[in-house]
Length: 45
Image (cartoon, rainbow, N blue to C red; front, side, top):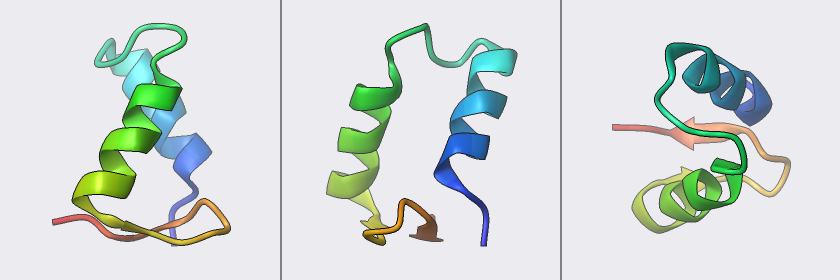
């Protein structure tokens, strides 16, 4: 299990998302993928 906060941090370091882009990323993940209540990514295809 990879924590969502870790994924967000890595994406920020890679420059894929700007500051404040976490909300949009979470929204995207919830729409496109199954995300558990604990904030862990269960399934990313």
